[in-house]
Length: 202
Length: 202
DNA sequence: TGTACATCAGTGAACGCGCGTTCACTGATGTAC
DNA sequence: TGTACATCAGTGAACGCGCGTTCACTGATGTAC
Image 1: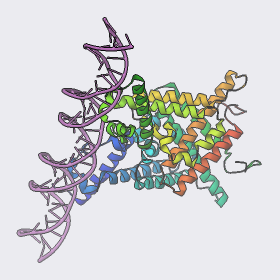
Image 2: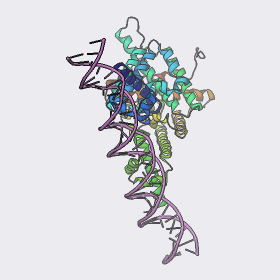
Image 3: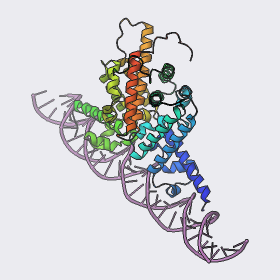
């Protein structure tokens, strides 16, 4: 039953991608090794030919999902990102959505391995969201980073709060609509980087 | 081994409170019935004299935790809330912190029972956060609600994103500090309710 | 290029373990007279 | 108020089940000559 080296690598990648999707949908604890391997088209015994433990796969699948989110974000300006991210479509499709929104609650309780992958994934996403500003002075760069960090946290909070409400409930939609509008407004006004007149009072 | 009716009610309440704390700390799947009962000072067999299933307790413990958050918020103005909520102390103490921040990721994958409790808990928290505005016209009320929804989602996103990063990492603190400052700034400027000049474009 | 052998990806049965839940039992509490 | 009996909160053993992990085995792939 041995398989080409290339085929084995491809199978491994397929298992990781399947895991990333299933973990987003059901959480790390909500998917077993046997079920996961079956979903990828294999029997469970072979799992340990590819990964040392389920925890190892959890870290790798997280990294995979996070880099996918960053890749999809590349080239979008912040407003485009928010329109796509803070939407019913995204909220209602955990398995294909953002790994941070799907799993950050779980990640908070996991080992440093996984949190490290999350931190790296968040940094990549921040970079993807920071438009390559023309003549990027240090102050501009820092202001852009601040704006993007805040916008991302805001968007993630909106999705997660909406997802915690019953499917199709008015509150779930209200949260999403209110937040999308507010985030877009604050992007347009950009009261973030430039400390005009009333800067240091907090 | 029978116990006073009052004692039984007290024991039940103690089990619910213990569950709320443990679920916040480790997630619904991270705490077993036996472990939970032991933490409350009982053996596991008696569990089903109080609850029909673990799922029932999950819903009740969630409701309990959520109402505790709302109760603690009563009387704080939005800026005070943000200072307490978007803080290292809160981030580093899941077991005593906000149930939404601790469990909304898990709640998204749970049954309608639990999501219904979350929606009710969120509504209560929104009410607690809306200062009793003097002469509350409909427009003011709606503007206040919009502001509070947005501020809550923003704060929750900040905590959850920070918690997904490794303990003590610079990024975890940066997220928290940036968001706290931005949320307080947008509260102070209040660009939310009043649609000055450029209202209906989204 | 062809043959002989070692490698190892994938299979499927089996492992111990902890899970949620059930149950017979205990004995103090609550109730009926 | 005192006695007799039913109730039921709490105990601890046991249930079937699915979990993560291990292992002997298979047979095509990769390697050495």
